[in-house]
Structure formats: structure tokens, C-alpha cells
Image 1 (cartoon, one colour):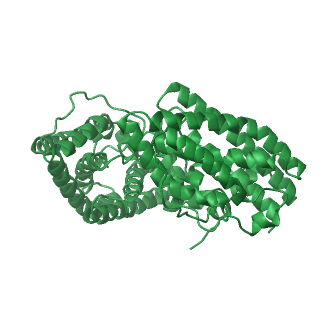
Image 2 (image 1 turned 90 degrees about the vertical axis):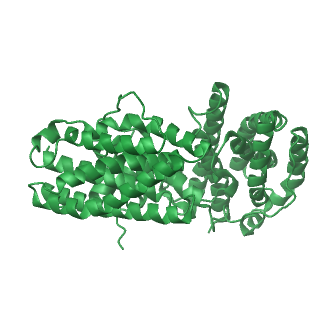
Image 3 (image 1 turned 135 degrees about the vertical axis):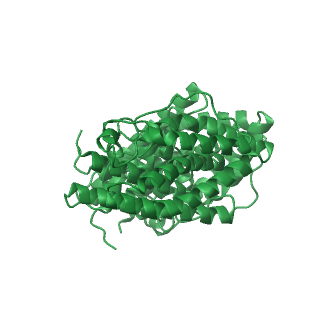
Length: 248
Length: 248
């Protein structure tokens, strides 16, 4: 297993899975502005996926393209963070998931801009502009809904309690990360900035950060995805699976 | 198009799609007894599917088997009633959908027992025993929940209002039905007995039968399925689609 290929799949699969999740809201979001904003975020993430998975395929050098990785792999080959495969549930869950991911994503891309790997650095420089905006938006909505009505506050607190156990995985370090030390930041190094931002936003949102730091594991290593990923892939991969020879 | 093949697909696709829908509750139903009962009903319906679609394949004589019909067709080839592809939503929707289907299914199978087509008659004789029990159960639960708490009553009334526009399709007659006149009952002939039973059960359940008899069309003809069927098939057909050469 090539650590670089593995790491690129982690990046690209996380943006792919979250992009697909967000696209499920298209036409269903609670307000038109939100519907368009989420669809745009989804498109940004799918665009980033093409870059990460495209680079993964170049690295692999076996003639696969990004579509092959997105549409022809099954659950056990996906390397996305468990956080992003969690279902949309209600808008509170969707926004809390987005904020927690954005806060990690922003720190990761900021650090990756100065990667010694020029392609990685270029993708990060392009992506961080989009993600800066994602993070601004999701932070604002977390504050608006957390410090909103009693119902919106309760739903946001529920979502935070439910999704917090998926935060830890973003900062775990394993052999893949260690093999790329110096090329990409060690995940744990991103945590202080993440914690500072999350604490500030949650405080302004009058939301309580859960005390337990228990975290589910297995997404980025591919060892144990939640049941939700398979259902999502069944929908996402339907067309190329059912019609393998289809062309545009 | 052979009317007999078409008609057999209508029967088999309706039991298949409803069986798949019910199986989605497995492990999630609100009470253990209900979980087991729904799973058993799903199994009965899948068993009936094997008979109907198996006979369809014999009729077609092109070497396809029931699995090929179930797993290798796409939305536009499905001939199920629109009612059965509607989502489970809450337990009220699931039970109202079941009761409305059972009440039609029971009358249809009762009449089909005396079909001049011996295979059809045999399948009906075997199936009606199971469906008698399905109808007993769903009638009882409609009454218990309709005439239950304020919340259960409201949910049942909502479900009935929502699903009633899918009743009419069960009794529409088209060229397929007419071509088989004398072999299978005309759908419209089943309506009086259906109406009598439904009126009695709804009355005991303190539920109001919706006044409008507007009905959605397009399921049994395959002309216009709802968006829900494609999503259901994506999940249901995942395995044979993704792994076309898989064997037991």
C-alpha cells in the first residue's frame, strides 16, 4: 500500500461523501437561500474530490481515473472520515456536521498550502479559498440556530452531542500519516487551532461542548465504516453500476 | 407485449416492492412483536413474488428467472401499484398502506382462486391463506391506533389522507385487464367488497375516509412511477448490480 495514494483517497473520499450527503438536500432545504448555498458547497467539495482522487490515480499509475475511484469501489475501499458519512437527519445535524468538518478542513488545507509536494500544495491553495467561505457560513448558522429559539437550540445541542464522537478521528495519526511526515501535517498538530475555534463558536452559540472525548474509529483506515455509507453508495453508484457501459 | 406476462409482473412487482419496503423495518419496528410480524409479512410477500414472477418468466419463455426480473430491471420496467412504493415514513403510514393493500389483495386473490388459468388459481389459493392473516392484522392495528391516543389518531388520519390518492389505481381497468377478461377479474369488480370492508374498519377506527377520489396513475402501467421507487431499487438491486457474477 502506497501511503500517498492512501492519504489522497482519505482527502478525496471525505470531500466526495460529504458532497454527496449535501446534494441530498437539493430541493429540500428549509429555505431557498440555504438550498442554493448547500448545493454550491456540495459542488465545491465534488470539485475538490476530482483533484484529490485525480492525483491519487496519477500516483497509482494504473490507468484508473477519479470516476473509477468514486463509482467502482465498495464500502471497504472508502477512506473517508466517519463524520461525513453520517446522515443528514435534520438541518441541525447537517449544519453541526458541516461546521465540525469545515473547522478541521480549514486547518488542514491551511497547513497543506505549504506542503513540499507541489500538487498537494496547489490543490490546497485552490480549495482553502472555498473552505474559508464554508467555515464562515457554517459558523454563522451554528451561532444563529444555537442561540435561536428553544427548539433550534435543543436540536443543535442534540446534534452536537450525537456527532461529537466523530470529531476525534480527524486528529488520529497512523502509519500513513507518519510515512508522509514532512509532506503533510500530522493530524494531531491541527487540534489546538480546531479546539480554539470550536470552543469560541460553541460558546457564542450557547451550546455545550460534550465532555467525553470518546471517538469512533475506522473511517479513514477503512476498517469499519458505519452502516450508512453502504446505503449512500447504493444510491450514488447506481448509474455506473446498473449501466457500466453508459457514456455521455 | 403479452398481456399475461404484463399482468403477472403487476402482481409480482407489487408484492416484491411491498415486501422490500416492509423489510426496511426489520430491527427498527416500534415493538418486538411488530418487528417479527412485519418481517414475516415481508417474507410471505417475497414468496408470492417468486411464484408470480416465476410464472411470468415461464410465460415469457426467454430463459429469464424471477431473480432476473427482480434485480435486473430498472424503474420503467416495474409494474407495481404506486401505493406500495410509497415510503414507510412512520408506523401509521406503514400500517395504513398495508391495510389498503391487504384489503385489495384479499379480494383479488379470493377471486383469482377460481381463475381458469390453473397456475394462477394455484398461486392464489396458496397466497390467500397468508393474506387473510395479513388483513386481519392490519385491520386490528388500524382500529387500535385510529381509536387510540390523540397522537396515534392524528398520525393515522394524516397517513390515510396522504395515501388515499393511491387507492384508485388498484381498481382501474386497462387493455391488459381487458385482454385477460374471464381469466382474471376486472379490477373494478373488486371495489364494492373493498369499499364495504374499508368503510367498516375506518368507522370502527374513528378515522375519516377522505372525500376526494382523485387517484394517481402510472404504476401498474409503468408509465409514471414516483421518485421513491428508484431510490428503493438502488438499495434493493445493489448487490447483483455491483457484483453481477456473484454466486451463492
